[in-house]
View 1 (tube, rainbow, N blue to C red):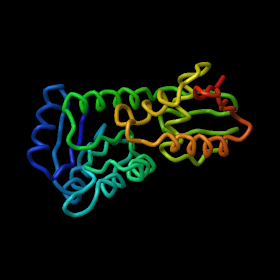
View 2 (tube, one colour):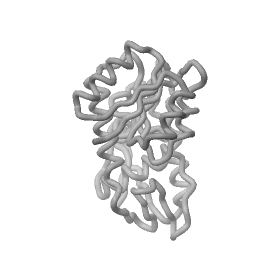
View 3 (cartoon, rainbow, N blue to C red):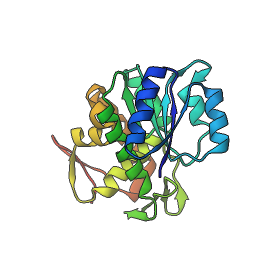
Length: 215
């Protein structure tokens, strides 16, 4: 059974989340604050955490710092691009804005757990090796300093090797259905940063008018 931490100060939202998760055979543990979450983390290993961005005594980022090897989905009323990018760079696996549909959130929870559960192998792509278990990437055996978003982009290319991916497909793979409010030029910026870090070890080709491809 997967253990899920729910950190949400709105009791109505939290009760709905816990009920829905338990109906899907997850073990859900609810906390209303950063301090309460810290106590829970000290006593229980969680597979995934649903973290409200705004809490009475801090933020979801504060809770994130206390978690290791735990998938993260942030819950927030914010929907601006800067906060989204900050969330992913802060280690988020996904991000959903309120109000949200429970069925959509459950789908994201399952997708995130499945993605993070595929952690028994390594992928090689050009001169790059991706350690899925530890969510790290190496260039000629040297650890690459990648943000969470850059790592996600690299993993997308690795799992779709030889396929031309449209910009929309890539954005949807990163942000799922929430990708509609992410400006397209954000992807251009992160592709550029990823290329700079990968250097000659991996060629991310631009397919003019379509998207990108890695062979």
